[in-house]
Length: 484
Picture 1 (cartoon, rainbow, N blue to C red):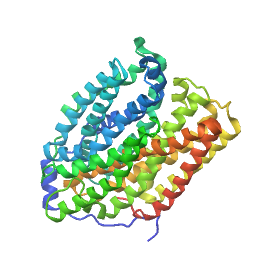
Picture 2: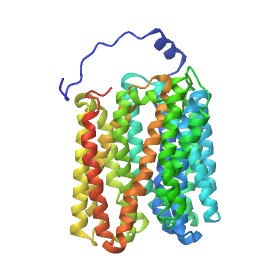
Picture 3: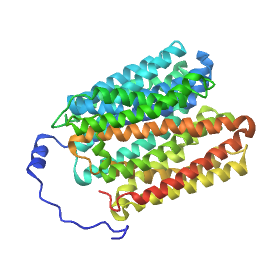
């Protein structure tokens, strides 16, 4: 069977269970889908929106480099650490209920961030905001999985993937606009306060348009698994994101030394729980599903590269090219627009070409990185926003074809009962990859700054990301040929 032609099959008659689920669970309306996607966009935007506001936060709160790292890392670590647990609780208690609680908590913690009187209060509020995001986001994918079928589900998952990528770039664009606008003298605080009315509107819409779903066989929370997953992510992400800013103190090395033992213990505990008939936090059987295994294997390096790229660009544009927050944000607009257009075209292309869409997206992304590196090499330090636009647009097309399709592949074979935990595992993988990208490619970039200068440090980081993209292209060959 060729890659370009998906097999033609005759749809089977729906099973009794499927007919019962259809009758019992209302389908997600277009307004309901828009509402859950709006809820999904909020935590994704907030992972990046703070980047262009960091210099202003530093000036106003006298935060210093280590504290600024904590403003970013506190959100990311809490977010990644609790995502799977959020998915599991939604499966048990009801996904609409958790979605509403998550929206309310996100709005309140955003308000706390916007009103923070000092740096330590801001860090604490950001940690709480990350926890609220972890309650909110897994319910989106789980609701889509439970309330859609067939082409409707494929389109909804593709729109979710498009939202995920566009929101990441929009975060920095919106952050630049809000800081520059200085609405009512709020400055950087506006990047958090803007979430409050949006979360309120999403909450009111969700009450009316999002149906309640839950797992047909809810299980108790896996306490040992939850604790070990938290320990695993903290011992990896915290030292990698905070260690450089703090001067790599002893605690950072001790945590990194603990990480492999925590990860091994987590795997062993989860395998044992599943073997004796309990329901683990992350069922190892999920990774035996080919689409989940191959999709996650590709999502990790993509997220590492994307997270590092967004961080490097935010620093290079403001510190190297001396763009203001507005110009730094607007320079990413071509990437956003191209990404969104490609993500909308993706479902039709996938139906015809299968996994070749992912391969093409990876190759186009590599082309965009090469074009950006050539632009930086030839034009530095006089590169205009318009001069960056072509390479940014090419990058956006590649990423818009790749990420939504990979997310669709990961979710394509998940049983409905594991929709919440499967979505949580996928988003945890993505968010951990983003944080690792900042920690690894970002650290490479910052380490080279004193000796190489901003231009050459950026070029080195872009070439490192290009190597990652080459790897993801080969990993795409392991994806299912036809995408459901």
